[in-house]
Image (cartoon, rainbow, N blue to C red; front, side, top):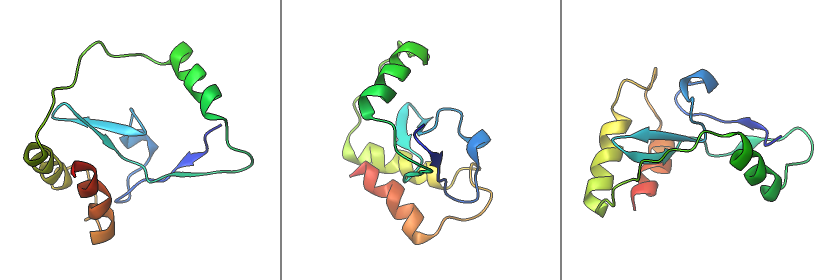
Length: 100
């Protein structure tokens, strides 16, 4: 009940099996700017409870990256084949800000 995710670059839900994140070069990247709600949003407590009970949790730890390393990862991800169309400057900014 969190709503329908919005995606970038003409991608769709099947493109993002880990939505709301994508793991790229061992870096989690938020891939949705938000959700369209049709009714009342689910409380964060209920959603967390759902995730704890139903989601598959990874044992792997993410390495700590420097700011420059994160910028490089995001730059490579933005030019990857993941995108069927080019991303707008606004969309690219959404992702590059995550590396700041």
